[in-house]
Figure (spheres, rainbow, N blue to C red):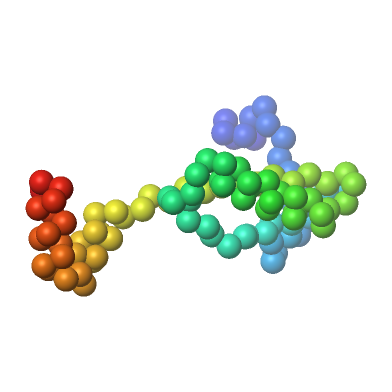
Length: 103
């Protein structure tokens, strides 16, 4: 046993394909839900979204199953978005906006 795995037990995987993992005593299924933009949602909306997804997954489970929801955050390229917006916007309106804001 290597030093990396010493002291830890390993899962004896019998089958792993198509988002299903089977061992001698357990079965796991992995689901990917559609992405949702978190940038423009309130904390309450984020909590409601996570709760709704968890409830929907829980509805298809067996009595002894568990549901784990992992939320992966991605950075949003705001500077790139602003540059593209400036490129396709009316220059006169942009100049007026910048003058009003003191930019």
